Length: 171
Image (cartoon, rainbow, N blue to C red; front, top):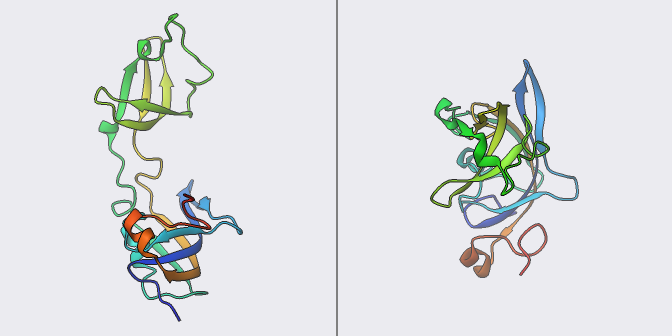
């Protein structure tokens, strides 16, 4: 019986719930035919997620919570910015208001070439208010996880830092 531990390829089915309007709602879940597959201990997942699976084996189910601080962080008001509307104009001076809509997630790049995503919060004639906090920032994460498979990672997988084959990277 193989146990979840460092350098094992682990396949899990999971459901993530977060609180919304006083109720737990599903924010994400694996598909029945597509478990989440990762190399345990490689830092691909939240540390608390991995910690809660150590020592488990195929068929084990576990429920646990990850605090906002240990998940995607607390919300930071400094990560909300007003970006001049001119930054969204194309070469003809037009703004694509189909893409720039409240609630849309936009890919952005800073002046040093770093890419990140922001959520459009508000639009005025002068600026677009963008929230660059992670969508799960400030939320306690409630996980239900079932271990579907455990196997040793191959030398190549460990060298590459990711799983190969089904559920992993295809070379």
